[in-house]
Image 1 (cartoon, helix red, strand yellow):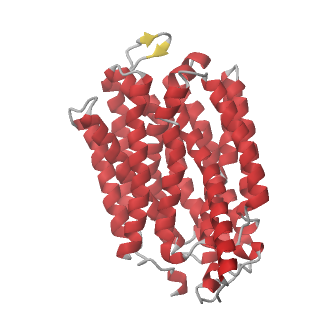
Image 2 (spheres, helix red, strand yellow; image 1 turned 135 degrees about the vertical axis):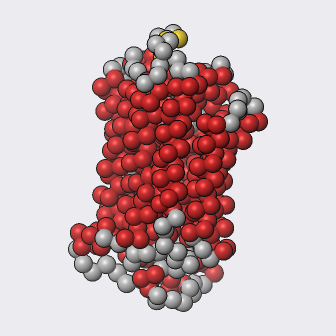
Image 3 (cartoon, helix red, strand yellow; image 1 turned 90 degrees about the vertical axis):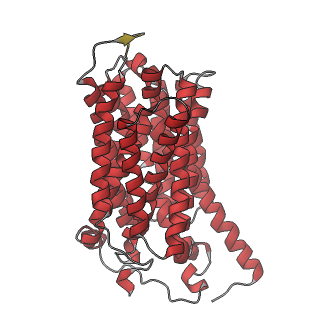
Length: 435
């Protein structure tokens, strides 16, 4: 089936408009994920917390995000991305404003929890939308581009945020992001459609002259059970847990503070290191996704990227690095290697029926955020074990040896992910259930 030129242009406009709006929503997901790391000092001073307590506050996002992944997948496969993402933006906006206005630790924790509840639905909805609006031939590349663009939110939550909070308070920033989330919710309702058919177009497979994928015919609980009992999904889950979870925990809270405590950098200079880490991560997503499509392989790309991430963690612990090119190189390589995780989403999607793509993406995504939720406070706990009691302006000051405790823990977590990656099933870039 083909469209005439006018309808094809209309299809392209609708497809890319939907993608752009969902990407905007996804950028706020990454912003909320990484922003506490830049304002960690302000948060510790505002709420008088220890390292472990600050880690728990930041990890509130991950706790609810982790718990919500399976419901988010069910929502994406049943009601569709349009409904899920619109509701998500509304809830996240309320949470962000509450967090920005909070005067007590408890209220801030509730705000952070609401942010996590809201944004937990966005990524799975976006990835599910991609499966409906883009060709399967480019699933690795479009997944990589999605993570690349989404990571712009993480990059904005590093260096640019450090510059911004020098002008306005961190509270104003979170209130402003909440208002932006409300605007994104409105755009989602007006423009986004969950499938081409909902906008009056044929499916993408029909446009390519192929038969459409079969619709889901059984209850979603049975579909979900089938996803959970597919053994080939679980190595991807644990790869996400170990490799990506450890990086998100570090970049989202402890990376900037390490550079400040151990090397005396101010926040703007320190945030450059996490900015480059996240830039490397974003580029790694795009490069590995495209490389996987080009090679027609998933597993070698994932394993190679995970190995690079483990070596970068070891470098942070064992090498005599410091501010300058050595530190910048290690942070960038860590991000670049971890970016290979994006191929895991495609590999997981290709071992289950197409109709449950949202559920399987949600399941493996749960591993990622479970890892981050555990590692963020665990990193702080490991540092508290050897903290010598030093306070600077009422905030705990950790030595490099304290940070080494957390870095060793992160390295061990990433090694677990590498082992899991070695067990991932090779799909040769096709859905094995349709072979």
